[in-house]
Image (cartoon, rainbow, N blue to C red):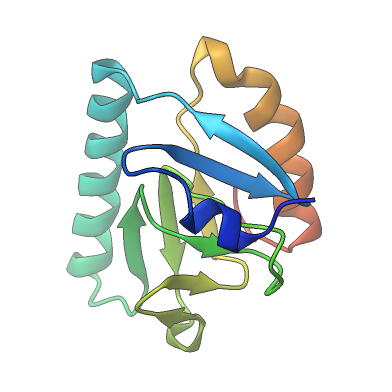
Length: 127
């Protein structure tokens, strides 16, 4: 079983997520993926700002420690956190209020099953 220390020990440039002690390596995102993610981020950030909202939005790579343990570490494409006590310089400790994953053909099972189950059990409000 792997821990967050193993994620931090990965070589520079190597990205992975850790779910229940299992490492899932991530391929670099495509141009289309980045374009979609960027537009979503921009739209949500503008909306939050227009309402003088207190929620904060972060795009990947941004660490989310879902269960406040050392065997779960994810980097959602977009995370919205409305509880500032969950945030520190390392990332978000606990479930964000809203997580967005831009689904690519190659990662459908991971996003639609593995992560969906993990996010539900961690009580992510919107996915």
